[in-house]
Image (cartoon, rainbow, N blue to C red; front, side, top):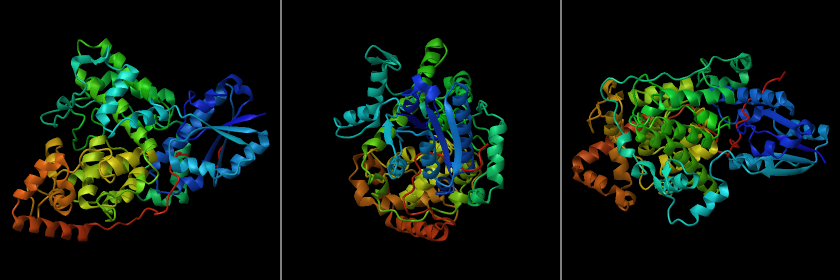
Length: 531
């Protein structure tokens, strides 16, 4: 009997269950890494996403070699050909793979006819196990994130005093919604210079015609991201030392020219397995206990909520929902994704700024994603499926499990309220309050009609009018719909006319993503000759 382990590109952690199951016999256990060119080209992925995953895979393979594992690393047109050759070469009778998070990729693996037994070990990249979430969800009438968050705090004893939350409150959201008014002193982010392995990846992609399409959309340099667990832990430590104490109040704020604000910048590393969410939460908790006399609880609670609440909840919902979830479209929105999501060329300063930031870095923080990129697509009637695939393509931390729930569910309300109690739709007033984008914009955030009326206003009121019957039934939309009813029929008619004209002039796209399902689960996303 011979056991081998296939390490996927988002399972880059020595504690992952497939490796752990063979830890006692590592000197006799072959380990395989493969990069698939076909997989890399299914979508025009952000170039920095390709570099991150590929370089992190290479670094991790070398780390395993150094501690005694038998590692083979290769590149190929597909996964199947080199994998079957490796199995035959090593006479492997059982292949162990930590179960992929993303359904499409697991189906891809299951479609391969292996000449040996295949064992999927339990995925241990999250704090909650899949079955634990399902058991919890089955007891609920609605999957409310706040309920899940509180249960997580109790289960894992995070920021608790007995069975009660520290400070006597579960939620400090009111203190964590400050607009960026006045002079703010923003902290620096921790970035890295590419080493020889990373630079080799960068150079090859830059010179490869295979990624020509991605090269027309995304920047590959400068590439500042961490690619090893050691570096990812440095980012965590740096965040705790320089940003965590002030994270809360301005976590929803947006400032022109500021890409990271007080955010941790850990999601790319969490999503490929370089660090584990529980160690992140526990590190933040320890720092708070060591600084209770100086730090405000709302900052630490706000950060913990992002990990043990939001991130774990999104994964759990993905696991729990049926396979038809990504096809849901509650509002029947079918407009194409605007071309400016690819180019950034729009007179709306908020979108122009954020989209160019994504082009340069593959990153935007959660409010930029939810209340600008998602919000505009929702009120403009963009296809949720096109938007979800764009998010998956554009973001360095984008994978099926996280983008499906964030876009289809939270951002687009395409599931009809299974996740969110009301749509995250807002006019220009929200953006004007929570950012300084509007100060240097060609449009007036206070106007609903006219040549300089902000498209966010046109689309917002038109969205409410288009879906009046559905939205009126939502009790959380009562006051908003009452505001709509106060607008005169003449003004509302003009708003809707201008909204339709704007859509006809601007909602066209230079690129339509494939309509066929793609297996963008495991991010083994590039291929070249491997030395």
